[in-house]
Image (cartoon, rainbow, N blue to C red; front, side, top):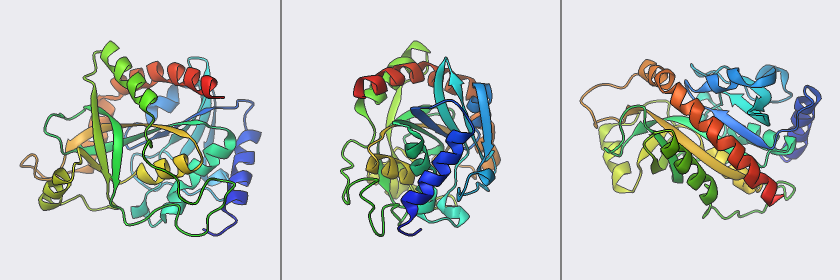
Length: 282
């Protein structure tokens, strides 16, 4: 991507806004097997990524590849059913481009979700984990290259990447729903191969509780633009070497489907409270 990134994001955002009367302040990125939340939105407009100017197209299994703008509990949201990844051949800047577009649409709070491998032995398959931090081991950063000050500062601070108040809200609502409340640190690798058992031992040593192939480029771009971020991982499998069994993407999708009810309930509970936080910040 070149220095016309802002213009491209503006053009894509203008197209999205032309398709709906809603003006969402909350955006969601729905990861592998987790996209059905968007199917339940009211007054929804569904926009295939292929129709949005210069928008990257998702090729991963379990990613529908469309932007759904609708209402959850009366609150306007923009939900991405699927994302793109480095392993699909995109650069980090391209992976983060949809985040840029959501920001130009008017989104101020971004909820990122993903399917992750569990490193922390306290997690079981299907656990929902609120991210408190991440470790970027993807070898790329979406901010590499010329900086456009219209997006944000050259050197954005990442100390508070995952909004503390949003994390508190998610953990509180999880308890109310009898979902075991977990927080953890997410390690992002490029993929597409799963990690080796030795790599997982290394990740555990440096403080990672979860591992996956997404989320971090989006979180970095969101913070660069001044958006507040909440991220929730669904532990769809235990990472390599934790259990004596091979890893399988079909299992990732199946576990995602199995916990979807809990996941949707948590999102429904969290969104109204985050909407109030956005109003306070405005």
